[in-house]
Amino acid sequence: MENQQLPNATLVLVMGILSIVGCCCYGIPGLIFGIVAIILGTKATKIYKQDPQLYTGYGNVQAGKIMGIIGVVLSVLAIIYMLWVISYFGWETLQNQELMQERIQEMMGQ
Image: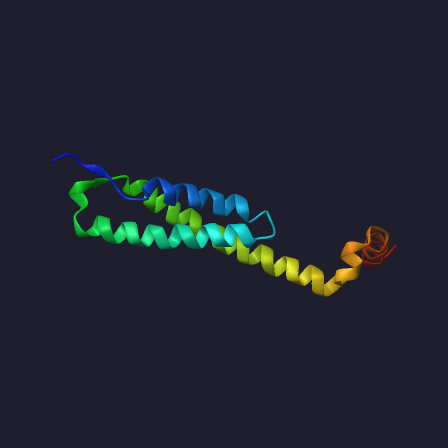
């Protein structure tokens, strides 16, 4: 019998890549893609562990899960950073460019 591609192996890899890219968009898309990559990767790993000689593409699953984990960590850090910026400067300051420039100059001591 011929080996078949592991279900969702390519999808896990794509989701892992998107999780790293998505962490640059305020963290939310990266968090979503990363969680999906981890969940699908875990399911594919369980299928592979039951009968490894039947499937190919396990390397894609492993790489996708690792990138998903990295993407989740980076996304959480991005979200924490954004919450810190909002709490430090205030929402009104972030919406007013002139006020934001004044606050940054105050921070720099000028």
